[in-house]
Image (tube, rainbow, N blue to C red; front, side, top):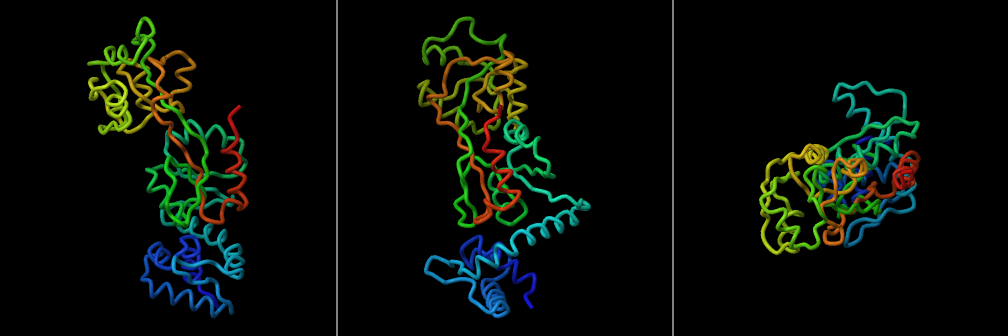
Length: 295
């Protein structure tokens, strides 16, 4: 009889395409993972993987077994995670989605409200989100990086340009005619930002304004929603992705200081699932919802 830990190891190896990576995901040694796979293959009565120089490839029997056990095991892991956290699972089939809090609020939530199923969102940096997805703690992730992990697959979801914004009352009285004028206007002005590093802002200053960042960094807060709110309140200017400030731009509370979207590469967002999971019931429906343009 196949044991649950054999099936968990099988799932990890299947998704990672490697016994070594599967063992790492399961937090067991490679020999232990190999032994569990061998035991499962004896129980099944057929090879589940073909070993190659670059990893493993599932056989037809392996693919069939994956289709049988992936969803039930993921649901079980979700229940166990909930119990460990003191939560009592409900009867609904719950889909677990990971992303950044800002992108979820602005782009994902408006599309998900029509879903009739139960949804649980989890927020964090891309690397953590993708790790949770790989581990089976999430069913789907939306991130601004495409994971190099063989166990995951990503499809482009959207690209979001950047905009240079200020509060309506703080904007230049007349349009700035050139980047030189932009640089002069911004020199010494207050600035609000997501992080101290300011990678996009500093690059824009150096490449397009011709000198290092020269605004006054007045506020740093690791939440884009707080940054755009601060801009609207006159705390300072900022360069922000359009998804986080579209509503305030439309309302006129903040304004575009000067067009910069053609100068700053847009931010690409990806819809990520585990290998072979994109067509799974529930996941496929939610993915289609997220890929549908907002009305």
